[in-house]
Image (cartoon, rainbow, N blue to C red):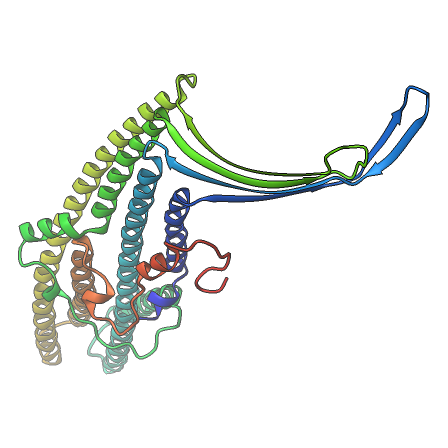
Length: 428
């Protein structure tokens, strides 16, 4: 499906997810040594006055070069927990991406069916106008023969005008549907085939649908990972209350060009272990810990809210899907009955037992029934896809679409253990 590859909203969400992947190497960086090189040089003007009032002056060019390596050995498990937070963020982001993908696929199905329905409605209204004009012409001939009154021709004229207005409304709606299709899919509709339902991919019962949604819907899974993020963030905040142990190694060379000094070059090397134990920081770490706990409580409440919303969406989608089955069967029966009624009314009108208005009403009933049938067929397909989306299974793999699947874990593994490099895996 072209929309799955080119839709701007989906591609923007994929870029956001690739940015989220970078949180992991950033967190892992705290496990690695930090290396800093330094170089200083410059000009130094010196003017010395000796006891005999002799003045000595010189322009010196001292310089110093050094390198320092710092390695954290222990920081209250802050690094380990920060890595866990970043990985949970990646998993949550993947579910958010999957949810956006579901929404796009449902929008694509809706746009597709709207175009099919719009085209069918235009054809139905055109056929209706053709029949009404035929009745109009027949009525005028009968008026000339004295079989009907001017009232009959006026009624026929009114129905033709009404039919033309309905045709215009159908054409406007069809044009809007085509433009919406182009926006969602990325290209204008052309030779669209009839669509079918996906009932075979949905659960067999309402309880099974609710159970499946609770385990597979991306909104719920993303909220679960958000709870994990919040819980682990508490440990990150608490690490500020624990000691930090690090080791630092450095080497440097300083060169002085002052010839009056006894030492012109100084080489230094050192290895220093350091432990910092926080005693009191004004309450910052304690406040951050309390804040993290409140945020964790919020995330658990949001999870419960998402579960309730998903459960409601599943029930609504299930009821709607079942309702469209009944509606479609009813409208199919209605169309068959309206076609039979119209044939009978026209035969009776030819025998003088029915009036022109009876024929016009029967024609209008048939047109209305056909319109409802087209809408019911559209609603039937969309409802089946909506149910599949509500349980969290509307994706290219389940639908077996003939399009390459976007795999977010590919980028994750490309950058997770990257120690350096400014270019993205895509070459940016």
